[in-house]
Length: 146
Image 1 (tube, helix red, strand yellow):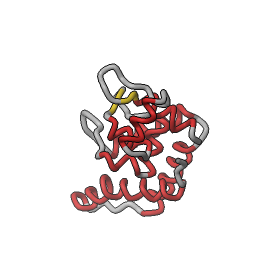
Image 2: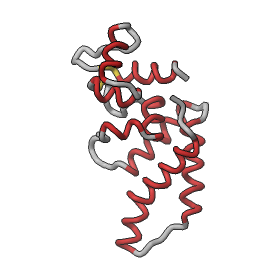
Image 3: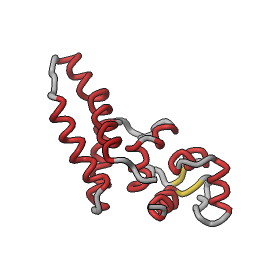
């Protein structure tokens, strides 16, 4: 379940361009050099994949706040299968959420909903009292597989 650094950098560059730079270029005529965005994305990838858990979580918080603004972070289920989604799931769980449905847990782990059910039944994932699976147990599972 490891994430390719190059794939992570490419996704971050694409999302920054799509969500931040392209709108600024359209509205204000501001064009940022691509190399500056790539350098920043490489620095973020180093933090996200590095040994320092606190630095990774802080980087995730900054990126989510800037790239996915709003009152509640709720990415589409498929987002969890992207390089950044997998890093977020492993390092920070689902920010602001303590449990998710079996289908979201499956997307975060890269397994089917039935696979999540089997993992819960075998005690590999923790069931939440309100239903679904705890995000902490998903993150723990991802870290244990690396």
